[in-house]
Length: 479
Image (cartoon, rainbow, N blue to C red):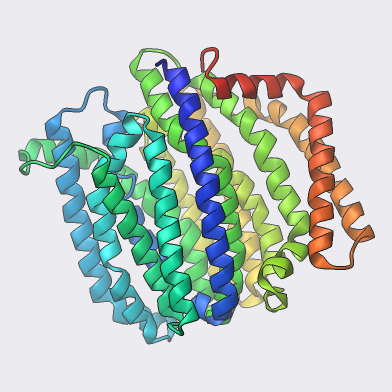
C-alpha cells in the first residue's frame, strides 16, 4: 500500500476513533460534571494538571526517535524503552514526594492523596509508549483507535458508577486510572515486540540526545496550557478553576477532534515521505487547507453559541465559563494549525527551535497570567490565547526554513475560509437572537443555520479546496 493510501486510511481510522472516543469521553465528562459540581471538578483538576505534565514527558517524547529514524533496529527500541522506564519511574517517585508541597501550594490538603493515587499512571504510560510507537510507525491506526475507545468506555463506566455511589472526587481519579490501565493492556496485546536487555550506553545516549529535545518541547507545551489552570486554582480557588476547566475541556475536545487524526497520521506520513527522499511540503499545505475548512467554522461557531452550549450541557451553575469559552476558541484555532506544523518539524528530526518558541509562549503566559489573574478567569483566558498569536510568526519561520512554507504563503489561502466563516457567524448571531427562548432550541437552530450557510458558501466559492480535500482523503495524488 502506498504512503498516500496508508495516510488516507489512517486518517479515516483516527478520525472515526477520535470522534467515537470523544463522544463517549464528552458524555462521561458532562455526566460527572453534573453529578459532582464545580468544586469537585476543580479539586481533581488541581491534581490532574501536574499529572498531565508528568505524563507528557513519557508520552511521545523518546518514542519520536523511532518515528523519525529511517530504519531503527532492536537496540533502538530497547534503548527507547529503558530510557522511558527510568524517566517514568523517576517522575512517579517525584510526584509522590512533591504531593504534600503541591497540596500546600493550593491550600487543599486532599490534593496530596489524589496525586499519590494518580502517580502510577506515569509509569503505565512509559511502559506503553514503545508499543504505541510501533503501531504509529506501521500506520496501524485502527488498533490505536479501538484502544482509545475502549479506555474511555471502561474508564467512564467506573467513574460514573463511583459518582452515583457517593465517591465524589475519587470517581474522577478512578476513571483516569482505569482509562490508562485499559489503554496499556490493549497496546501490549497488539504488538509482538517485547523488550530485551538494557543496551550499551552509546545506544542510550543517542536516544537520550534526541529525546531530551522533545521532552523540552512537551514540557513547554504543558507549561503553556496547564500553568493557567494551576494559577487559577492557586489564586481564585477550586470553584473558579472548575469553571475555567469546563471551558478548557471543551477547547481540548474540539481541537482533539479536528487535528489529532491529522497530526498522528501526518507525522508518520511526513517521516515516510522524507525517508523516501521526497518533499513533504505539499502534504503540509494540503493539510492546512483541510484544517481551515474545519477549524475556523467549528471554533467560531462554538464562540457564537457558547451562551447556549454551557447551560444546555452543564446547567445554569456554569455561566462564568461562557466568556472564557468564547475567548479560548481563538486558542483552539491556533492549536489545530500548530499541531500539524509541529508534526512536520518532528518528522524532520528538528525539535530544538520549536521547543524554544514553545518555552517563550509558556513563560510569557506564566508572567502575564500571574499579573492578570486577579482580574478574573476571563482575563486569564485573554492572555492564554493572545500569547500564542503573538509568537506564531516564529513557528512559520521555522517551518519555512525546512521547506514547508512561511506565513506569507499561508495567509492568502486563509482569506476565503475566514470570510465564509465570518458570514456564517453573522447568520448564526441573527438566528440565535431571533430564537432566543429555550437554550437547547436556540443551540440547535444556530448549529443548523451555521452548517447550511458555511456549506453553501464553501461549495460555491471553494470547490477546488473541497475537491482537493476529497482527493487527499482517498489517498489520490502525491501528498
